[in-house]
Length: 134
Length: 134
Image 1 (tube, chains in turn yellow, blue):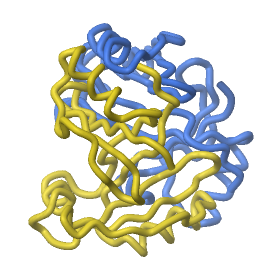
Image 2 (tube, rainbow over the protein chains, first blue to last red):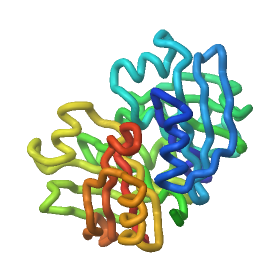
Image 3 (cartoon, rainbow over the protein chains, first blue to last red):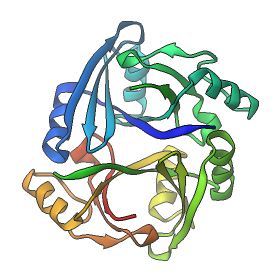
């Protein structure tokens, strides 16, 4: 698969503003974008840390994907996103490799990116996103 | 802090060879290095995924840091490593920012890298490594 590398690491947090402040203070992170996906119940901030990107994810309520993650595991690393030029092609290759997918077609994710998630069971417990652009 | 970006994402796995095979098959990863740190009870593989790096970590026994992580949480993301030119200087800055550290001085980590860990309680649940070189 033709992957460019890690696009971002997604981190589930309880308080988005507080977490942004921590990354700014400790690691000199610069806020790039904030976004809100109502249908996923998530509010997010993209931060630049050096030449890389950390995506902080907060839940708008308990009965949301991030809300359930926080209730079960607490704040912490949530997913790794790998950048590709073509998410649909990446999904075809992943299916051909026998990988279990969460999203069988690309969808619009945070920050207007085209995204799809691979099931963590296919990647030894790591929720893995493939993402295009950004 | 002067950070270059994400040096690698560390992933705890149950079977190192099987996990290397998964990353090669699904994501076209290329094995860069394997290493063994007896005093930490960890065997590791560094993989290139595009221009980024994933570090797979397996335990040599249950009573090791990775063994205890696997018993508690199962396989999955373990830490994020941020690259800096000077780990000792990064630690001084982190201490000045009030961050709780796991390692108060740089130590020799996997692959001969100079490393230190910041306590996850200081970073909203994310075990964060600062690393120099590689």
